[in-house]
Every structure is written in C-alpha cells, then in structure tokens.
Image 1 (cartoon, rainbow, N blue to C red):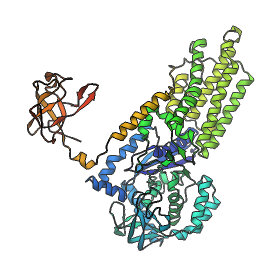
Image 2 (cartoon, rainbow, N blue to C red):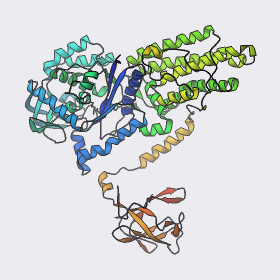
Image 3 (tube, protein in one colour):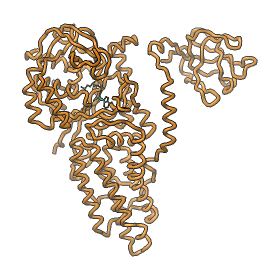
Image 4 (spheres, rainbow, N blue to C red):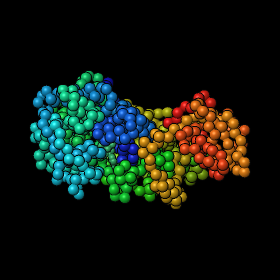
Length: 636
Ligand code: MSP
C-alpha cells in the first residue's frame, strides 16, 4: 500500500543573512513535524533552502568586488552547516540560483504573460532594499522609513511588469472563507481577510534598476521580482513544470511554515499566482511569532541576534530544540532569556526526564543485575499507565497536526510526571525487601522501562539524539519508524532479558551563576571586537613560508630572528615566540606569514612580515602548515 504523503516547507532564507535563532526556530519546528509524520507512517518531503537574488545581494557582492553568485556560494554554507548542527532532516535544499529553478520561474512568468495576467506599465513607490518590498506612503514610518526594518526606503520610478492580483481578490477571499485551515492561526487569518477586503492592487513584478535576478524571458532588461522568484521555489523544487514524479506526489503542500512578517506574501501573492497558472493552493500556511530579545525583533541590522551555533555548543542541540518549541506557543511572540532556558534544562530535562531514566536504570542494575525483567504480575496501576500512554499518543497527534508543539510537549511531560509518580507509588525499594514480591518488582520496572521506550518515540521528533541515546540505554531494537500511527501506540512491547546499555546522564545540570558570569564575559568580548569590511581583509596577503634559519636576538628573551622563504625572496622576520620555541625547533617548519606588512624595526632589527601564532597562556603556538604546502602559497 502507498504511504500517505506529507509536504512541509520552511521559507528560503536570504543567503547573505547570518542565521540567528529566529531562522533556527522556523526550521526546527518544520523538522519536528516532518520527523513526527515519518515516524507515524507518512512519506514526507521536507524542503528548505536559500533566497539568492535581489538588489541587496548584488550590492553586498559589489562591495566585496566579487559576483553575487560567488558571494552566495561563499555564504550558503552558513545555513547548511547550521542545519547539520541542529539535526535538520530536510530532503532537499534549494538555491534560487539553481538552473532548474530559474527555468521554472521563467516558465511561470511567461504563462502569466500569455494568459493576460501580466502587463507592462510604470511603477512609482517607496522601496525597501533590505526587505525587497514596496510600501505605500501611508505605511511608512517617521518620514520614509520601512515599517518592517525601520531603515530608509527609496522612491523608485521605473517601467515594470504588473501582475493582475486585483483580479483574484474575490476568488481568494472565497477560498480563505471556505477553508478555515488555509491560514493559521485564526488571528492571522482574520488579519489577512481584512487586508484583502481593503482591496488588492496589482503587483509590480519586475525591476529594471538592477541586474541580479532572473530575466523576464520576453524582455531581458527586466528581472523578475524576487518574491515571485522566491515563492516559486515551493514547486520548482518538486520538478514543476514537470507535473509527474515529485510534483504529482507532493503538491499541494500540507504546510508552508513561515514567520508572521512574511505571511502576506504567502497568503496573497502566492495563492493568486497559483490561481493564475491554474494550480491548487497549499493546504495550510502557518505563521509563527517572532523571537525577541528584550522586546525587540532579532536581526542583523539591530545587532541583537543570538547565534544558534554558540547556543548549541553551550547547551546542547536537543536542549535548544526543546526550549524553542516548549517555551512559547507556536504562533505567539516570545522573548528569549537565558534564565528561562536554564530553568527548562534543569527542571524539565534534567530533573524530570533525565532523573526518570537514571533512577529506573539504577534499580534495574541493583535488583536485576542490569537485565531487563519480564512483565509477569499485573496491577491496576500498570493499566492506568498503559491508558495514559495511548491517550498521550492521541493528544500528541492532534496537537502536532495543529502545530501546537508546546501542547504536545506538555502532554509528554505529563506522562513523564505520571511515570515518576508511578515509581513513588509502587515503591520498588520496598518490594525489593520481600523475595516473594520479586516478580512484581520486575513488572514494575518493566512497566517504567516500557514507558521510557514510549517516551523515546514521543520525544524523538523534538530531540532525536536524546531519543536514540535513551534507546541505547534501555537497549531496545524495536519500532523506530513504525508503519502506521496505530503501530506506534502499542504498549508492553519492550523486549526483556537483554542487558541494559551504558548508563549516562542525559542532561547535565547548568550552573546558572557560573553561566551568568561567563555570558557577561562573552558579551564584553563580542562587543569589543570591531568588525572590518571584507575589503580590508582582502588587502592582506597571507602566505606560506618555510623557516630556513632561526637565531636568538641579542639581549631579548622572546625575540627570534628568522629567515623565511616566501617563494619569491627570503625575508627576515623578527618573531616574539622565543619563550615557546628554541631556534632549532623552528627551522624547517612551514608557517603562515602576513607577507605585506610594512617593514618595522624591533630591537634594531628589520622585520619584513609577521608569523601567525595563537596566544596560549603566557606563550605562543605558531600556525603550522603541512610541508606539502609550497612556500609562497596564498592563504585565504
Ligand atoms: N527570503 C524570504 C523568504 C522567502 S520564502 C519564499 C525571507 N527570508 S528571511 O531570511 O528574512 O526570513 C526567513 C524566516 O525567518 C521568516 O519566516 C522569518 O519570519 C523568520 N524570522 C526572521 N527573524 C525572526 C525572528 N526574530 N523570530 C522568528 N522568526 C523570524 O523572509
């Protein structure tokens, strides 16, 4: 039998942005629903990617003296590596500079032109380049500032193609009214309905003032508006205009998951485009809220972004995934605080879940020599646990289908609490004192272990690494990726007789006071670090050099006089590494040299460059290169 399908998308992120937890939030949430659907038997397609065209990328590349594509190639890894770090299980990563995508966008544009939904005229309005959005006079803030990012907008007047969005106003309203799930949550739906009722205007869908975009096939002076380009990714990634294969299987999408700031593009522009080319609309667009820091939206321009890489390194990937989805109802705004994060880690994760596993495995070790006992003696309290397990599965299913991640986690943690209370109530430590109750003791521990097995399935979408670790510790080989939801819900199916795995703490407690101290230092460090333009950096010539001789500089404890072969000529470099290296140790090493530093005199000796070294305590460690790197090789 064919599995049911499920298609989820994140927005495609502006490739030039530095990913922050706002981006991580959308992507982790999408990952959770995808992992959950796979677990309960669906054939899932999960799409993410990068948005790479537009004026702001063109301008950024120009500043760095490279092409926009070179810039995009250079920075796209920032997203890809973050998704690896966050365990994002996407099926496809689309880049809008991919050839198939460009062809698809042009195909759609031509189709709309052919059917008369696109016409040429002249556009005049206020344009925000960073947001790639036109605003009307009345939407502007403080004179001519963008209502979204608050930066200055520019007045633009240019020939432009227009899309007859107004033509689809009534049809769109009707669709939204007939399909309550099309826009979620309901508050956002009402907002969009009022917006449409104010009257849709035709949309300017091409630009002539810059080049970095997909050309209009019929008129190459124009590039296609970035939002038309970007939105099309949801179907180009499936191979459209080829309607067989992935497109036939997965379109219409089950969920476009987006932040509230880009809801209008997804629920007005996108559906009207789809109507124009005669394709079905996505089933649901869900707008989540914003993460703020001290009440302000997080963004590069405001300088308050929290780096998710740093957070994961500091606290652990599952801790961050859990926190993002537990702390704030999906759909509402949330304010980021370390206090709340640490509270969740130490409370929910370490005390409640971590301790449940630890105490149970401890007792299996103590009373059964680490071997999982069989279930033989029933008690009413075991059946209550079994009932709660089944009802929790059903609650999770309905919460996750509504993307109520925090409610699903709430239900799971009620089960964690119930299992902890079940242990207290059954008091295995008392049963252990009476040899006639040994079978019941085994059944109690089995019930908890089977409950923990179930918990590992329930938390898997949120915390995949922890789920796998728990399963290693209870040593089950069963049931990850069941074929149906009903299979998922089975209880008392844990194997018995196997030895438990190595017992490890799941979530180390975080020392809040020590962390607060560290964060103050971290803030100070990052604030002091002045940022430089790429241009500055690119002026620096760093090259490989081979040290051919070394001697101490007279009367100096730390200066060494080196002769370094840089491929062209041999330099004299005075290096302050004499406390960490003897001259002999350095001869023959290939090192990194700043080659175009202006010569300077140190203790009367000319120095024609600098050797790169890390400061380690009071001393240094030089940056060494393998001796296969030829002297003079450029380092960038
Ligand atoms: N490139 C467009 C999307 C095109 S989709 C066809 C874009 N990119 S973005 O990188 O600026 O934003 C991507 C997503 O991150 C959006 O859903 C946005 O709402 C989300 N977030 C950006 N900052 C955010 C927070 N501070 N908090 C939560 N999410 C936010 O828009």
